[in-house]
Length: 460
Image (cartoon, rainbow, N blue to C red; front, side, top):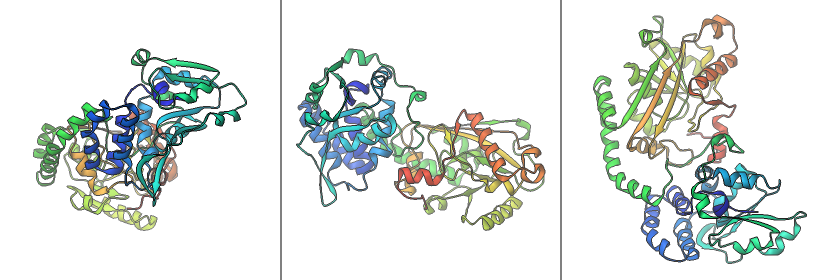
């Protein structure tokens, strides 16, 4: 049995996790109110501070649709795990019980899904008419609940004043972690995650500590102005003028061609099909700006508002294979196309399964490996408002897009010239892009992502 905050996580404050709940589930105003109350939270007792954060973060939220504990918080919990604390927790027995001072709904999915914890003990939230009322149940877990265990209970806790400290009196052996040791802990490396973090949701790309939150709220007014300015420049000006201006405002990009003398001149017969992995909705636009030529983006699913204001031409797939093939062939005769066969974005260093539709249409295929880094906000969401994706993305202080144009597929690895199946070609392109980025290939699909993050199949 271990105390999550005291024995596993490096940080001593749980404020960032409640801020994430307030911001992602309740909105900017609720998060701002919680931020204003932070001085009071620090001054009052730990119990009262917890009650204030719970009330502001949860009151009025619909209990049935609360998914932040599964879709947003695990990423930040994983990034806050101490390597030494993790090793200590993992080496004692196969059956593990996680204890937390936070509401159970915030921590349970993280501990069970990513750390394989059998039982999670935490405070329950009161619900009325399907909504959280912002209060915790007063009933706490009792000691007799541990009598079911048929082996000695080993406890790992800390010297901090845990609200559930009495539970550890049942342990036959108790290890205590002091705050001085935790300050020297290293962050758990990604390769040691018991389960890889592939999908996560939410808008905030940084851990909202109190200081970081101050900077965010100071930045938002200027960020809105910057979004408007960047959008106007990108939409109205030609690439030779807009590219340096946008670079100056913080939208950085790097284009790495496989052969500099061939960029923009891959073929003289029809159009080229650029096949990219998908990181943000700006991937095709960055590629078009980097190549300094217009491209047509083939989209699987794009919000109508984003599609309307896109600075490049977009065509939407119908999910009918025959119609889509005809449409892509027609567009290729008119010029170059860019397609993201994953069908959705992935924030982490993984590639989703590539749809093989593109493989049988043409042999003029050029893979493009794209990586995209943001500094404050994610410009993608599975459960939020899609039309806000470009707003949040262009509000970032800085972004960096790296596009590596790989060698055109050899004839031996095409359907028409090499006799390969469309699935073989799609898998080959996925593998080449993964090697260029040092990413890992998966067989996960768009449907898998949306079922995990939003509970639907992702149809926009």
